[in-house]
Amino acid sequence: MNRRLKAAGGEVGGGLLVAGTTSDAGKSVVTAGICRWLVRQGVRVAPFKAQNMSLNSFVTREGAEIGRAQAMQAAAARVEPTALMNPVLLKPGSDRSSQVVLLGKPVGELSARGYFGGTSQGEAQYAGRREQLLGTVTDCLQELRRTHDAVICEGAGSPAEINLRRTDIVNMGLARAARIPAVVVGDIDRGGVFASFFGTTALLSKEDQALVAGYLVNKFRGDVTLLEPGLEMLRGLTGRQTLGVLPFAHGLGIDEEDGLRVSLRGAVRESVVAPPANAGRGPQPHGADVLRVAVCAVPLMSNFTDVDALAAEPGVVVRFVDRPEELADADLVVLPGTRGTVRALAWLRERGLADAIARRAAEGRPVLGICGGFQMLGERIEDEVESKAGVVDGLGLLPVRVRFAAEKTLARPAGRALGEPVEGYEIHHGVAEVTGGEEEFLDGCRTGSVWGTHWHGSLESDGFRRAFLRRVAADAGRAFVPAPDTRFGVLREEQLDRLGDLIEEHADTGALLRLLEEGVPEGLPFVPPGAP
Image (cartoon, rainbow, N blue to C red; front, side, top):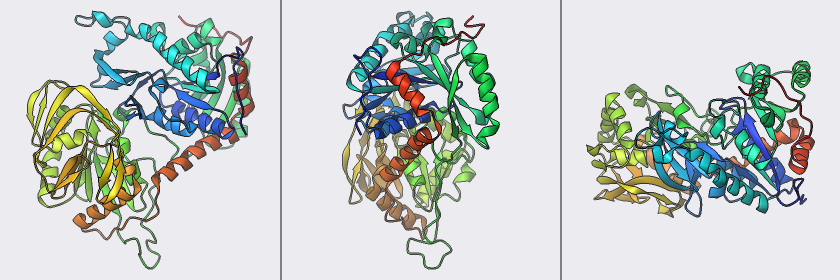
């Protein structure tokens, strides 16, 4: 089936904004689900997020850096991700500053005040920059709508952040500029969803409210008939329908946006961890032991999605840790990427993790460093760019010297390692000089049981992942053998299909199609008091 959708104007494809009552309400998942449902109907659909704040990013084939959530939404839409889908990416470097990535390339480091239009000393040139970006954002959206039947836009935070509305380019500011309807998602698992829907609407201006076409309840548990009277009362109060009640389901999250929100102690990825094949059921053709992976939850942790492919392996248990004693029973310790390599290095030392990792290496127990983690494992870091700390001693576990360059490396390398083909992507300012090592490893190296590479995403290559885990199990003395048939790409596709199923089975798909085809509904009532 090929279904062509056109907005009321007929010149561009339909658009829809998926906003949320709060951060983490489920906007990313709903956007991905709508994309997968539409593409299965034969609709040419693309995702879009005008501005994303995330430490998890991805490199497109043209060498542009965008949020990983948008890359996964593009996979849901079965299209190649491009910089058009996430024109503005903010990568936090501290609680008060972020690197600004515009159309896939870094353009500067700004404080929140500078980005939002402040005029503090040294940042006057950036005052009002956020407002100036609206033209770039709407141009990108217009181009996507010109080449697709539908574009599903994800908002950020809440559209009712009244302190930021003047310079908003990602929520109602975008909807107003592009004249597209908005659907507001609320997480009922948190409680207070009716108040959240009503309050969100009532804090918007009359002009913004005119674009809010309905609501979507997310993460509902129980009997939906008990919820229906409340939904009818909400419609009476706001004049807007609830367009679906999506049930709570485990393991449906796509790549998270913000590593700052990961719970440190004992956090486990949402992925379902399978036991070793045939465990407790007779012969053990794939090994008798589980393999335990401890990921050091360093400050400003980025692209922690690198370990998702490990968590998908039967018999591999992945957890995030922040204390040295939590490394004691780990078969593999992973130092992940970070937006603050020098800061993360100091954190490892302050908490005693650096000494624990050094002891592991001396004992021949496996350690893997990825990107910033690879840099920390080296002998020396020279940083006048990210931390401006100058020369700092690394952990000294790999024969590597790192110098931070002003220009960021953005690449999609491919090659072979451990006898298997590997693909990955690179996002880093640090330039590594490898001066030795026992084995080359994905443009990095291995010394003893310590491995380091700048390549993100390499563990998603199935053959390489299995070969690496066999080496880890041997070094760790575990009777673990990876299952021969785990295909990470297939598992991800199945997950995206489940998101599409949620929309198809539990949302009012007819109403969603009407919004895409006909645009903003007429006569949506105003809910007082409106914006201050």
